Image (cartoon, rainbow, N blue to C red; front, side):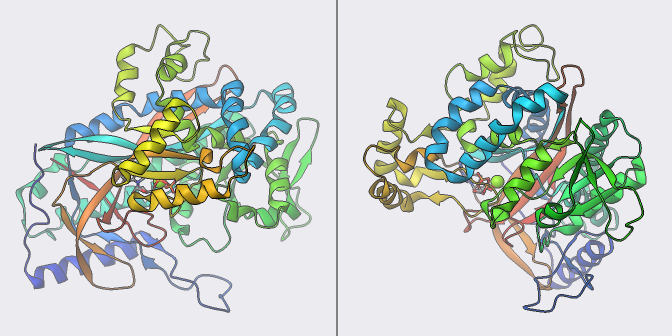
Length: 519
Ligand code: ADP
Ligand code: MG
């Protein structure tokens, strides 16, 4: 099925009116970012916001593929929860990765240092707020979703994404699309997407499981975060719908404030503004930081991370879940038999489908595997050797990925051979080659000839771009104590970027937050 010609034709005056409607809606509804920071002298409180990058029209997306992506999310949730509970599996992977990647080595050794005590004292619950990202892979007129990556930490844009869908629905309902295309008049083309509500409900589920009605949610943030309204909206929803208080702190602040209390190591955070009040007890630690080496620049942050990990609070995510989200794990899962082992082995814990075999079938595994694209290790195994050969002979078909999150880290196409040569030149004989910290992935090739009007906040004018859209599906998973299991699909995100850009981070100003128009 081919996608409609897009965007529909509009006059200059119609486009200007649509831009005006979209921009005012965005600013009025908190579909916003903080503007770039002033060079110096930031005011004590923000004084203005800019609209988050948006697309004036929703972008056509095949309905069947959208539905399929949502329908397999609970399987992915169960899979990654089982991975986080499988210490031997993670050790096997990170023993190797740790030799060549300092950041992963820190995460893995810190986790090993705390996990036995934690398991003995509390058999801790873990909360996953996941996002599985896909691009459409086109062949002929057909296209199918292929997974780009699976995020287990700081999966962002859940709030802004729900608002993007609401924005496009509003524009349709208010006549702001000027009947420009028949697809825009189809009410079923705008999917119901409650990612903001569902992610907040996931945090609330964990908070309830913790079991202290006075406890709060701690949001661990990055200094100078511009995507603050996406996080704040979750906090407002927690308060308004669930009556749950939340506070925000950076690692640097927590280094000073965080305390443990009692023998269960309750996490306590005093409020320096009310020194006579008892410190707040933390039920859930929600990380919107801690996923890049930049979050650990002084080294002290690692001690704070471990201090939080050792506490009785439910971590979103735990160190184990963060490790499970590594690109190396994604590559290993693509090897034969791995999905079967995690989803059909009856010895595996119940993470939302009953234990192992019985509830899940080969067809479920096939449904996941269908979303994989080619993934290779870059070690000296037969598969690794094949990858090195392919990367040299056909670099235009591949992307090379390190074990990093947050965008801007990948190496594309023709840059791969010299990069691998450089890694090999830097590797010392007798030690693990540096390339083993990378995976090789086949490039997904999205449908051609889709365009849309993209608007960057603060620029005040739209840009007609040849676009590629990346679909994210959120999942919520609460597991780990052997009895409490939450496993929910939690909505979607569509990010649309200009085709000329390989990377699509909204925060780095390249992608727009969009919504799908199901066709
Ligand atoms: P990060 O953890 O930094 O977000 P990703 O694996 O999501 O890393 O890659 C960043 C971006 O690079 C993606 O959003 C996508 O636009 C592009 N990308 C990644 N993998 C592929 C692929 N296999 N084919 C095409 N584009 C890709
Ligand atoms: Mg990504």
